[in-house]
Every structure is written in C-alpha cells, then in structure tokens.
Image 1 (cartoon, rainbow, N blue to C red):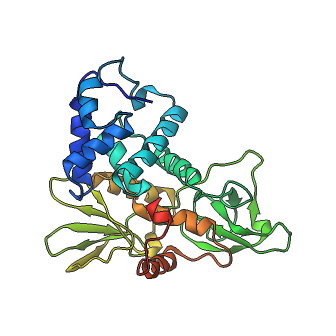
Image 2 (image 1 turned 120 degrees about the horizontal axis):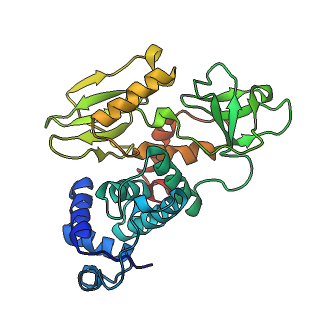
Length: 311
C-alpha cells in the first residue's frame, strides 16, 4: 500500500521527530529513506515527487479501532526492518511522530505490540499460554486478572503458573477461572509504572521500574526517550516515588495517580521493558520475576543480542 499526502509537511516533521526520539543515532537522511520505504516508495526522492499523486489516505483517527491497530502493526514491523531498530522502538517513534495521524491509547499500543509479537512468532498462538483468567488469590490486585504461562497443567491437582500485575507465581486450579468469552492479554503494571528516577551526571533523569530497569530518559525541552531495559545507568542521585505498601497495583486510586504521573512527564507510549512479557509467558518451570529475566538477558548480550529484543 502506498500512502499519499496533500503535502510534505507531515512526512518531513515526522522524520525529524523520529531522528530526535532515537537520540540522533541515525542520520536524518537514513530516517527519511526508511520512512519513505515504509510508506510504499522507493526512497525519499520518489516520495517528494509522488506523494500527492492520489487522494490522501485516511489518518489514524479516521479508521476503525481494529483497522488502526492492524495498519499500525504492519507499519511498525516495516519501520523496524527499514531502520534496523526493535519493534518496540519502531512503534513508539511511529506513533509519537504522528506520521499517519494521532497516537492511540495505551490499550491500543499494547494491542498493536501484541499483534507484532504474534507476527514475529514471539507470542504463543496455541495452547493455554497467554490466556487471561480471573484470579482470586492473595496477590490478585484490584483487576483480579492473571495470565497463564506455557507451564499450565490441565489436571485439577496441577499447580498453575501465572503472571499478575505485580507477581509471577504459583496458584491452585481452584483459584482461577477461565472465562467462556476470552479476555484479551493485559499489560502488567510492574512492566509499565515508574518506581523512581536516577539523575545522570549531565542532569538528565532516567525513570526506572520496580525492578530497577531503566524505562525513560528525560531531558529538558525534549520528548521522553525509551531506554533499553538492559542498559546500565551511571547516576549520581536516586529518588523513589512510592513504597511497596503504596504500590500502584494495590488499589485503583493509586493506579490513577501513577498514570497521571506518567502524563506529567510527557510519557504517552510503552517502555521497552514490556518486551519481557512474551519471554515470561512462554517460559516453562518457575516463571521468573522481571529482574531475573533481565539478568538472563544481560548475560546473553555478552554473546549476542537476544532474538526477541531485536524483533
């Protein structure tokens, strides 16, 4: 599919935003050519001359939710290949650049990311892994939801490995119920909410998760930048936003407060930390908490990048 525009204003602004959001790791010319190929052109030069040859394509906000998500997933994977970046980075910069319209909600973005995982084979498409269930256990949280992992035994006496908003653990078969009408997978809050901030020597702030994984870098006058979850951050100061007793997965009021905190930082996208979720869902045996998964990834990076993080 070739995208047409009434003028070049939107593609030009989008290319500059993408370059900035990627921390100027790529020259603007490469970003421009990458966007052009994603939009169906041979290169930026062809886009300049042929962008208005047909009526403009509908913007994101003019599509149905399903069409918006499907189109965004396709563009995300194409952009990841064109710029040699991860799909998580591609989705964030694509929507933040407003190349094809206004960014969707966090729920939309997670649904798009889920489509990308399925397309690249990182999310199970059969069996019970990734199934969302109702959970009545002690660590259920206010949403009272859990996701089953690949280590799900159907027997009534088999222990069940689950992932909730805050925990990875074992429960009994009696503590879960599988809805007749399937529920969509959900984004665990532990992979999304910020726990505190590090101050780097240059004054930049890096927000981190409860597992002390870097999430976002904040610099004055710039949009938040994603930070790879396995990066080591050199910092000179550290602050925390809450304690475990007041964690955002303990009640809905706290969740609303932390969502407001993210918005106050200008964060409207997903952190790269959520790429741990497929690894956790497809694991067999005791499911590791995010900190343990991150340690494994850091060790693997010494011998080459993990497949999922490059998808």
